[in-house]
Image 1 (cartoon, rainbow, N blue to C red):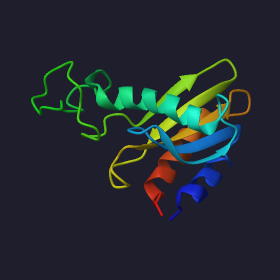
Image 2: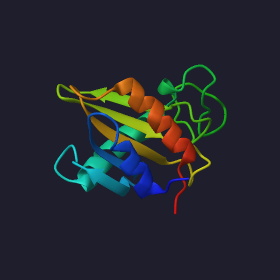
Image 3: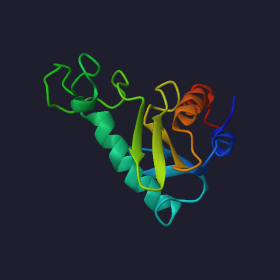
Length: 145
């Protein structure tokens, strides 16, 4: 089972991969990063992608029917969800003119459920479908060392 470094190196073997990081979305810190950062440095990229991940993970608008519960447990619409409650969001995809940003949430069985992998793909050479499949498998096998 791969650790963070091995996981990131494997992610970089995907066609069009430009950069990858494992990020804690509660703190905005990168636990590991390889390749090019998408906005100057890995720390800034991690903090900015963590904001996006936190928004998607904590709000019921992205959970769908019955997918997440509110922080109070009452299921009231529009309330923030408990972090990791039911893990309704699998991944986020942001497209830009020159690339794809894929944020894949790592399940609760690893750490405390507040981690994701950010993979930056070149739009011309990247294969988004393949990247989603491979990152899902990487997340299932990832072990924090």
